[in-house]
Image (cartoon, rainbow, N blue to C red; front, top):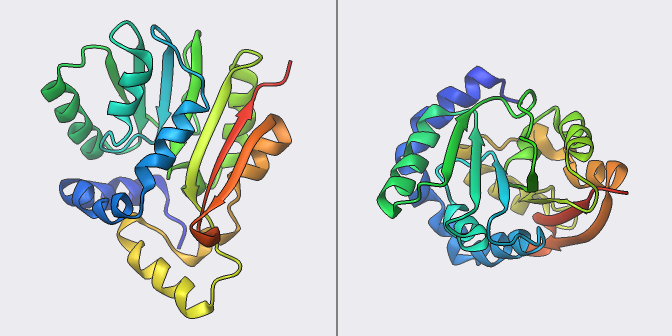
Length: 214
């Protein structure tokens, strides 16, 4: 089943309290290095403004703050207020005054002027309208600026039993069979210049970076 906005809010309202614990398995598999690589590909510098779409509980905040420094600006956007509350707790504990968190629908929200890079990790492949979102981002970013994606994908070469197991393990995050056809990296290729694409975990995930064409 593909979730609508209200179902997403309800699901993540329930999972927000243990979401970070559930991510431990991904960290053991080394997902942090792929988050870091996706951010590196944005070519951020101290003082830059960066947007984290579908920021959740703030898994990328530390890495983004490292990239833009105290003089930069990190804007996290998410549909779930419960997830953003957890992200705010992290920012407050760390004393990051330059973190702004916005509760909004990614389909309707537009990036502020001066945004240098946009990041989305484990987010857009769960948004049915990902294609117009990426098309809009390609128009809003200045030439040479980048969008980096990291997310799950259908592992075409996996045996069926392994695919079913992976879906079952990720069910708490809203993953279902219906999302198999969602391919945000193809929209990046359509509307931007793809500067990096890599399949991860034997095709079960991907990392992709697109650059606004001149």
